[in-house]
Picture 1 (tube, one colour):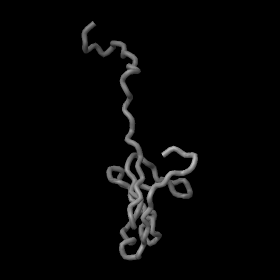
Picture 2 (cartoon, rainbow, N blue to C red):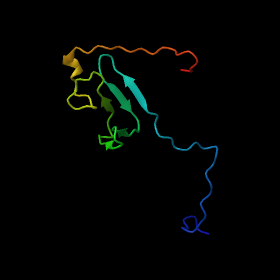
Picture 3 (cartoon, rainbow, N blue to C red):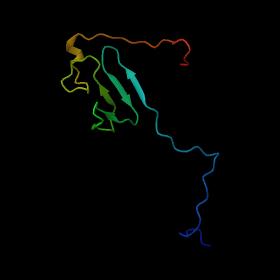
Picture 4 (cartoon, rainbow, N blue to C red):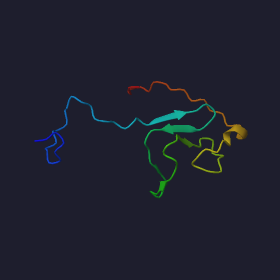
Length: 96
């Protein structure tokens, strides 16, 4: 059988070789600003409809409540006086 034969059986995947994994989703809380989400996500409204956005860029969601493009951030937090500097802390009974 020739090495380029289209009818050749495909060997099963090698369990020792890890499969390609989607990058993990990361949600970063920015000081005095929005949530910045990276990774493959779907954004769904209250009625179950998917909102479209440029999946090639980070998703930036309003946290201050003043954006005119909700749920997306339009940088209104910069002029609204929004302040919030969230820091992670251990939660009893939960691994971090």
